[in-house]
Length: 96
Image (spheres, rainbow, N blue to C red):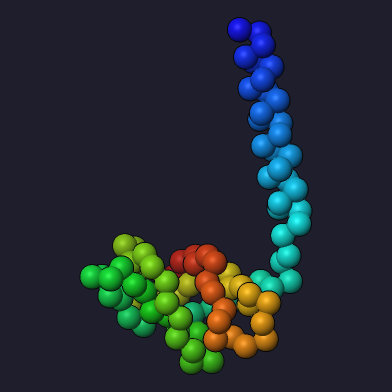
């Protein structure tokens, strides 16, 4: 039983080290914040459409708690390009 505990402890340490390595090597220079307003909900497709202050429309899945005119904050990823048309939403948070 003692050897099993040692092996489990070693596995946990290795997993933590790998996770820390991946997080420390994540390139955050391609991330930016964006505010938007919910303009449309398609509950059949579970799709939320939002519009930013420049008039661009973005979409994400997960209608359950959203309503028209809700404000949200998004973390966006440029995917390493200068054009915004291939940017993706990584996370959306309700803002009121």
